[in-house]
Amino acid sequence: MRYEELTIEGRNAVMEAFRSGKTIDKIFVLDGCQDGPIRSITREARKHDTIINYVSKERLDQLSETKKHQGVIAFAAAYEYAEVEDILKLAEEKGEPPFIILLDNIEDPHNLGAIIRTANLAGAHGVIIPKRRAVGLTATVAKTSAGAINYTPVAKVTNLSNTIKELKDKGLWFVCADMGGTNMYQLDLKGPIGLVIGSEGEGVSKLVRENCDFIASIPMKGDIDSLNASVAAGVLAYEIVRQRMQ
Image (tube, rainbow, N blue to C red; front, top):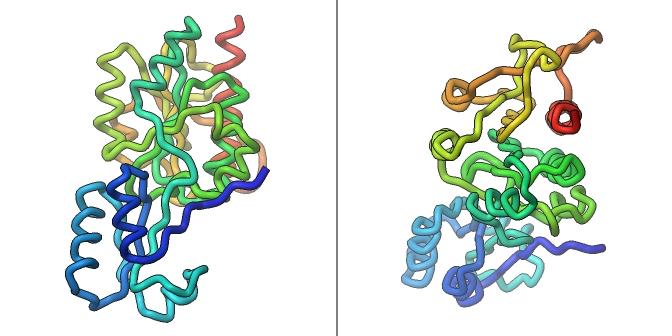
């Protein structure tokens, strides 16, 4: 199975992609270029919360496959994002209490792909990622997910803390993985649950952590201090699976 990350090059092509409602993760624009078409593109990008990077001509030439970029290259999601509502609906259709994995600032595409794969196998109904400072659904993510990306909905939200609050109103409760929390084997992880996993470097951000009901830590015996983010997600997801099966 091959996945293409959608690289869109050239002014008309990029503008057309925005107009068609395609999800554009980020655009690279020639630094200092201020003409009409480029200004229209950056305006669209801001409207859609797309990340804008101003770069040199050398950088654009490097990124360009067609060598006809006209000062702008866009990276679109390799897959369409779902809405949070779609994830809840999937749980409802399966007659199961919602189980959602939320990722705070995961920047490594291999980790995101591996977590989507785990989410699918552990029966999670979907994955939620933030728009900023995080990797989107790229070709690498799709490949690492081993096809799970076709079955497990991924939603992208502007503010993770607000999303957690909204889901709490719908009856979900939240557990985040962090050092110094309660041993995960001592927690009751049944019912409608959101599992929050942070990035390897920084863990879960303070604001997101404060919105969680519990902090779960994975017991560790070794000499290094932390697990890879996707492995931590797998360990906790399967503790949730184990408790749900009882």
